[in-house]
Image (cartoon, rainbow, N blue to C red; front, side, top):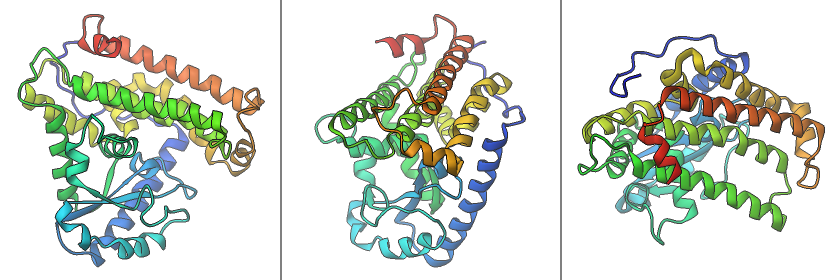
Length: 324
């Protein structure tokens, strides 16, 4: 396929049942949250966004609500922390602590401009990549879009050539995924990941990998475009939830990967399966249920590799970017 070919609307495909159910649930709850916040909040100097399963449109009634407020440093003292927490706290079963890793105030200066070097901590990197790859707005859509496009412009400057891809973004996505993989291993060794270890391991294999792949293919689609076209394509694709992004780029060919992903969502949302997996620790790696899902995760990886290689020929710049 010509890398300059633009995409039409995603060809509708019959989604696996759990994905379809969770997407409907997510859309309904997001609409309710937006309406509630819109009635109670005012001002356009900040926005409220959500990441995690709600940001990916994969939520169920057992999902955490990982939200945070974004605004300028100068308006930090005006952030309506408690008001937002009170409103959203009535609408979900599980929510983060106020001023914890989520639900806190993130400055736009930190989110948009602090990429790389010592100031770019793991926490900042996590928030930035989740904002970019799996984020939905809850209040002030225009404000969220402004911060989003400012961040994309920082990844794709006017000096990026048409022959290249959004390689700065590729490198940051790779760094993020490798960092959380390394951190998981170290936490396991130190005993910090013993609680709910198996679900966390499976999320790394499935939902975090889907997030990673979604960032990689968005960057790959920027090949053959000038810097403005690259920004436009990234904005178009990264505003979509990861599953929809996969459908948009690959159409019906994405179905085998999505069926494996559906199994992951289905089993982790089953209370009985989840309870059993919560009790599986790092010393129980041969647990039958865990091993079966990890094997499905390997199949998921193979399907993603096949999609990548089928769409992007051997001379496509994404392959070199992933290698070195």
